[in-house]
Length: 174
Image (cartoon, rainbow, N blue to C red; front, side, top):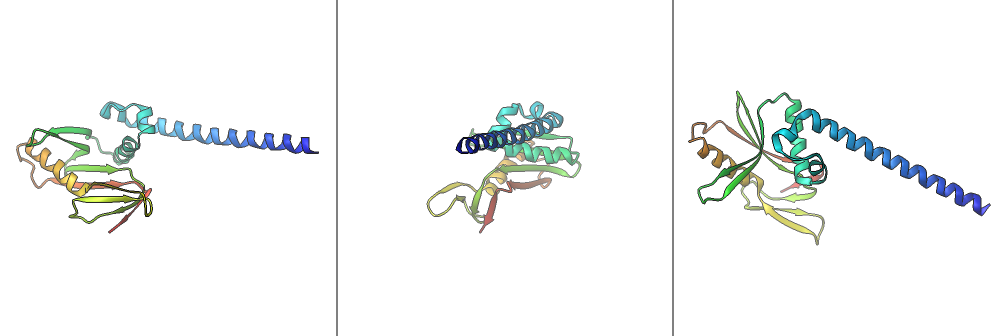
């Protein structure tokens, strides 16, 4: 009787593992299909596995993919431009169309996000003891737009639109 229970338990675990592997394969294949169809690699230079396993790149891909699905044709990723202090400014995604220049800052964060519109920093919190500060993405994107505007000799001032994209895995708080 005990031997039969052990065989049944081992058999059950095998099915659990098979189902988990099938779900993983389904997820990876779906992601690969989206990645290949969208042309993200050509635009970004990011390989599939970097896109799959790097949280930041994965978040940028999801933003890019939604814009591509909406029919946007001129999508630039990871654009580095010089700043006045000789450093560079990296814009995650820039969309150019007849309505303007749309600059996206992607934050693929989880947990609770605290910070005001004019705060210099924001805080990512996972409870009482695990907190991380990061540059306010609203101010960060304003800097990106300023760099782009200066690079284009201020010909398009007033045509810029800033978007901050957080993942659905976080909750924004004030």
